[in-house]
Length: 215
Image (cartoon, rainbow, N blue to C red; front, side):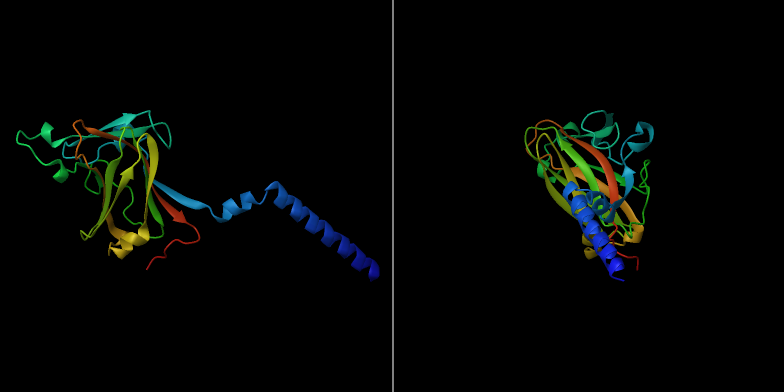
């Protein structure tokens, strides 16, 4: 019996030493990443120019495929937000001019999934090539015309990850099971030239530990 206890003690010591060695080498990071893994559903990454660029714009935003400033895959969408002066002879206050590109159930390029239940965040990457910050507005609407809107600044010459927690949409009374549209707008106030933004990797992410459950 004492021999058995000695062997068990040695094995326990070896197990502790192996665990300490694993920790020291950082080999547990893989397990941590696995526990914190996210499920990602790509809504649009603009990899297929013939299919991915036909958002609703009213003609006020020019969307082109680009090999620059992409964050996922090989291509991004270069969106040029045009000024009101390009369409109206009478001056229009730029503060009231918010050209938008809209991905919806009615656009030629359709929103690929309208049931967002179970996901945690809506994310999209944006690159601002201007020398000054610009303000974006992201808006989501559901089938009942409830809307959620958020705005922020895009830092010059840098990729900004725009992330919207879906709990905020629920708080605005949107029905996550019937999302109808996503709108990406830019404030052109104070600009004398059209404003460009490179958009890429529009996606839903699910935190596997904290995803809201379906009702």
